[in-house]
Amino acid sequence: MSELKITGLAEEMSALARLPWEQPLENWPEDPTLTDMRGISRHIVRLIKPDPKNSEFVYAIKETVPEFANREYGILRELINRQAPTVEPVAVIEGRRDKEGERLPAMLVTKYLPYSLPYRIILGNQMTPHEITNMANALAFLLVRLHLLGFWWGDCSLSNTLFRQDADQYAAYLVDAETGEFQEKLSNGQREHDLEIAHFNVAAELEDLIEAGVLHPSVNSVRSSDGVIKRYRRLWKALNEPQILDPSDRHAVEKAMRELQDLGFAVEEVEVSINGDKGELKFSPKLVAAGYHQKRLYEILGLQAEELQAKRLLASFDRYRGRESVPKPPIHDSARRWLRDVYHHVIEQVPNELQGRVEPSQLFHEILEHRWYLGEQIGKDIGLDNATKDYIEKILPTKNPANL
Image 1 (cartoon, rainbow, N blue to C red):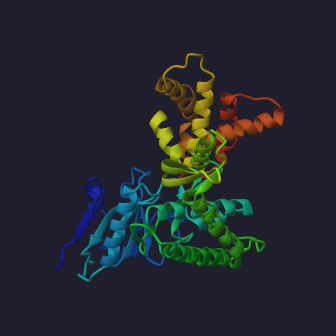
Image 2 (cartoon, one colour):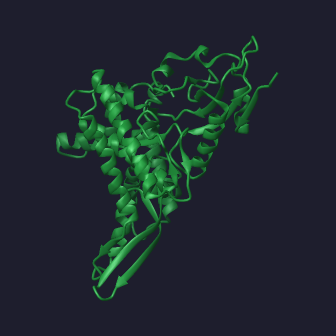
Image 3 (tube, rainbow, N blue to C red):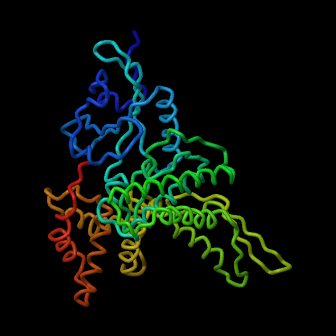
């Protein structure tokens, strides 16, 4: 008789060992609040709290065959190593048998991404065409990042993606890598194949929601799917094709790099060539990495956030530092004061009963937005403390309590 085999992260073994592996996954009890957070899958999937006392820690568990479970576990580990936006793999479970000794499927265990939602829940909340465009942009951005890493997804879709709020847009994370594979560098044909799959899947998924009455009939599923492809192509062109710059502009290269940074990419290596006959300056990005603002935020302030959240927090810090007297103190001294007097001062005003409804960096962004909105209403700046108080009293209670 085969024995239960758990292969995975050492620090998770204690929690994993307590789970009822001898039961078919479809029989596992699932918190109703977690059931609502689960997307559609071709496999049986459950969201499970391994420790009932720790409501913030959740596993996503999927039944599959051993070969697929081990392969996907390895792919997810490599994606994490390459800092791709994806869920974190925890373990593969093999050799399962029920109490009668009958074989049970293997399982893949991942950590559920906090503050994330599947697309069906997001789109079920009276989404506007603008918000659907934001989701399309997020999916395109994710696919560009994966392709830059040499990863062919093979099943890019809304169903295989989780979305987190990122300032006034979304950040997308890969959640199913079963069909994917790494190449040293993707060919144009491989990228186009992925785009064809994405275009078909997204259009079909949106059409299903229209027919089910979830989306308004005015939403055009094909046009929305086209938006994913168009956004992808614009990003890919900006990151990979040479730009012809004005050689008389001494800041032209710096401006070109800043444009890529505004897209969320750090430029690690470039090639600049000058055509003497035409007087042209050709700027070619050679090595780019996603997360420019995220990296800068962590280096200066030690905070982790989504890319657009990081950009907003850095803007607040830069304004704070700009108001400091000359000569400016060391930047990390300013960072400590900003964290204490601005960021944590805001976050710590949230009462216990409302904590966890909005991720902290997103909360800070929304309070800054609320401050601007109130200022526009009354014609003057009401200050950060007043905006925080008003947001906590009127806006935060309307947010759904976070179950993860």
